[in-house]
Image (tube, rainbow over all chains, first blue to last red; front, top):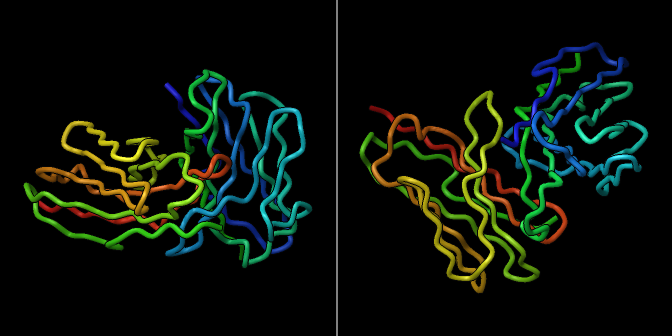
Length: 120
Length: 110
């Protein structure tokens, strides 16, 4: 159980275009989804948190108009990188928390396999 | 951003060796410490979530300990196997977000 898929796994795009990344919880309902970014040799850094049906909360330094997050259902969240530039090239990974209970303080999250974005 | 440090950055051991990694984290506002195993091209897999000082968890040949007062956790692998090769991430939970270390990359060769 607790499987999260992410699509695409790899994308190459031209500078100035927009790219959409999908994150799906396959066997549970995800009330909260998280988007992380990882640059080479760095740690996973939280970009934003999205709760189903409400606006995402962005971390400091993350442009909400550039990284559009939609969490329209309990199984799907999307991250759209708008007007992508080479400096947006990174590894983007999502995670999800379910509605199955458990200790919220443990903040257990289930991760997708990630998306490698390369902007030319 | 909370500082989570992992060491060593990478490790290369022979099959059958036992090994351990360290994760250090802020000792204040502690909620939980998470360990993940991350194989290339796969999703990070949760190994342990620990919440209490002195906690010890075990899963097969892998075990972990937690010291919240001094802010560190150890992950041990007994009798390493090639399939243990992966990056091991720890993450400090402060009640809201997970703050990750950079990971320890383990390579186990036959």
